[in-house]
Length: 328
Image: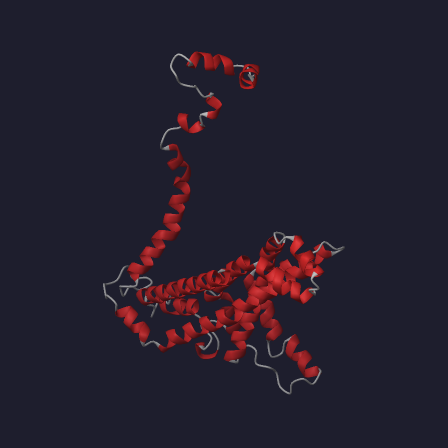
């Protein structure tokens, strides 16, 4: 009785049910049938076509073309070149410059990634709570992100110069007897470039952590506080597990970014990549080998690009497996 009375109170429902009794079917209202009933089959394809075309033209095709190019001896201005098989990859195995650039890229990632995972989390902890004036510090921490890398690198070049403010201050306070060769010593130049990358990326990854911290239940901190856990123990046992997936994401993103570093080395170390090219990374070496209009070999540069791609994929897979192991 209740069901019948409720149906009769809805305008139009009793009428449609009465019309459908003779056929044994219950006719659904048009509004609930779904708009897909009146849409041509090709309409969804038309909606996604622009995105698919852009991805294919600027992503898939260049990737496949690079792989094909790595089996040729093409030059930057000479067209496709001749088929050479695996000659370019065999050359990689005996190329000391390639292995030096690979070592620099791996060292770059091994030093920069842990810093970019830990330091932004600490910064996010500092500015997470809403306090008077906290907006200023959030803006200050994020400001380097919006600045041009070239402009920032030029500022760092002036700061680290042998006659720059840092060496001047060190000499005035008697810390050093001679200027520190930040930009002429290969090791110090590599560390300076890493410091620039880390400094510029802190604010960007801090935003990721701020979003992750907002999803950590406050009850966990209250329970830890009742158990006598201090700030450090709460950070280790509550905050870190709560943002673990974000840490994995940042590790993968910063690792890929570290393997693609070019501008920092180019501006701080010059067009040669430091003294004698000692600080060249893989992207820098690709530019030298593939894009030189006179002695460049686009085929060999494509082979180095494929090697960089495989190195990047390997880093991402290792990070994912490490994160999955931690979760289990």
